[in-house]
Length: 61
Image (cartoon, rainbow, N blue to C red; front, side):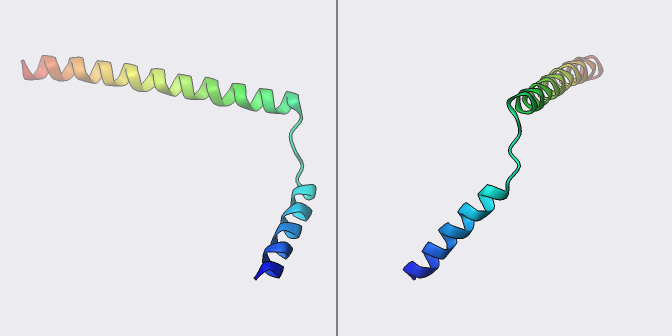
């Protein structure tokens, strides 16, 4: 059992060395894009919810 765990850890280390990690600039750019898109989506959902709520109030009252 310990041999299997040891082999697993060795394989993980080997695979981690094969990973192409993003540069600091790539990471910053990707993070910025994700945050901007998430914020835009949140604003869109807020506005849509607000407008639909007002429309339903007008219809039901």
